[in-house]
Amino acid sequence: MVTSERIGDSDSVDRAMSQVLLAEREARDAVSRCRDEAAQILAAAEEDTRRIADRAEDRVKLAARLADRAVELTLQELQGSEPGSAPAGSEADVRDRLDRAVDDLVEEILGAER
Figure 1 (tube, rainbow, N blue to C red):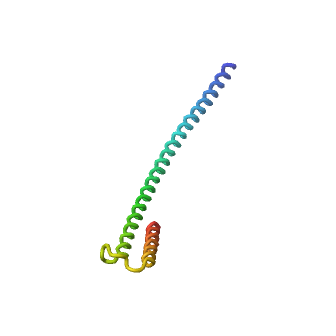
Figure 2: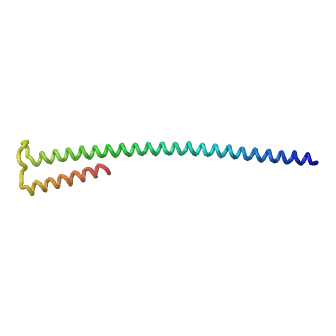
Figure 3: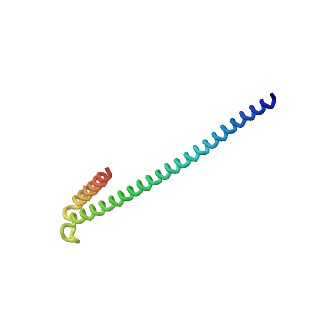
């Protein structure tokens, strides 16, 4: 009888060890899947960051082009039709027009971003 009890105990131990090994393998697989998922999330976040940076750079370039064009048009307006001619109006008038042009430019840039 002692022998049959040992065999029964041995079978129980074998089953328990098999369960432990199976659980360990499942845990390793789960960790591996989590690592893969984390790598995918990180790659997607890095791509989003690149896209945001590209869009920001494009907007900055657009703002610079708009500013350059607005300054050019305002200077042409202030100088009159002839290059090199003095701005029309008093100094205060010229400053007011420049202030309005800058305000218009800011409004245009902010409006372009929305």
